[in-house]
Image (tube, rainbow, N blue to C red):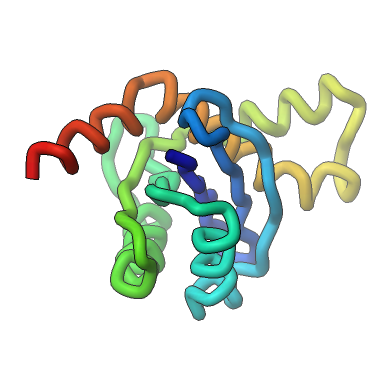
Amino acid sequence: MRVLALDIGERRVGVAMSDAGATIASPLAVLDAAAVERIVPVADLVTEHEVGLVVIGLPLSLDGEEGPQARRVREVGDRLARGLPVPVVYHDERLSSAQAGRSMRAAGRTGRQARGTLDKVAAALFLQAFLDSGGANEWERERGAE
């Protein structure tokens, strides 16, 4: 089962995808945030890549609380969940953008060069954390028990 991850920001949405075995995450694309709210671009990716689950990064505060940004992401995510043909789950994405920025700087990419890439790298980082935690396997087990 492939898993699609969305790092929803105010202007851009980073997209990452797992391999078919839900083991390895890779950056895929950056979408315009306004377009994502219309659902079609995400639905197209789900269909094109035969995705079985969408994971949305939830930007929790350092103490684990949901602030205004996390509430906004949940609003968008809940709309996506109603419009997509696959389930949507949330996963903590604290510090994934900061980690992606450090990785990009270490690779010599800064500022404008990194802006578009940063979002999809951040999505790949939290998707990999989700996969490593067994999140995809847990979801499949729960789905099989229904």
